Image (cartoon, rainbow, N blue to C red; front, side, top):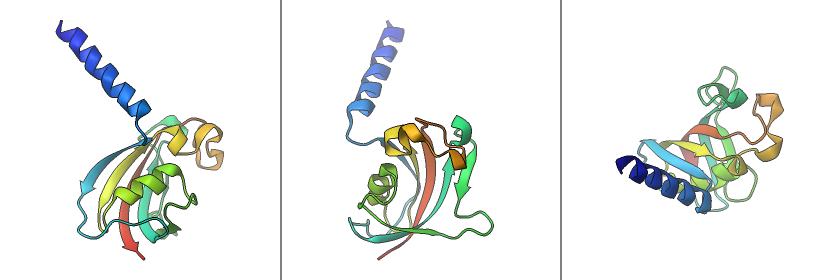
Length: 133
């Protein structure tokens, strides 16, 4: 009976995630204390992306790598993947969070071969909001 209940809970949780409006899950690693960005703001972040070759422990890119610098983009305008547009909008200035993005909120069916991102890959991004303007 316990096993059946566990399966039911898993199924319900899974169904919710598929039907939910967001294709990302967020885990706050370090709370922020500033405002959240609004659509059209320019946001600067540190970011490390994981999921190279479908392995969520393998990094494919980081703004902290030698020669790289923080990444700046206009939020909510479709200039970045959906997981960033919607996910970073839930973050406060100074916050560090891990966003797990489903393929439709990442690079989709095409993937991003140059970075080793396979078609239909789920990705994890560790993001720190540095500046909002």
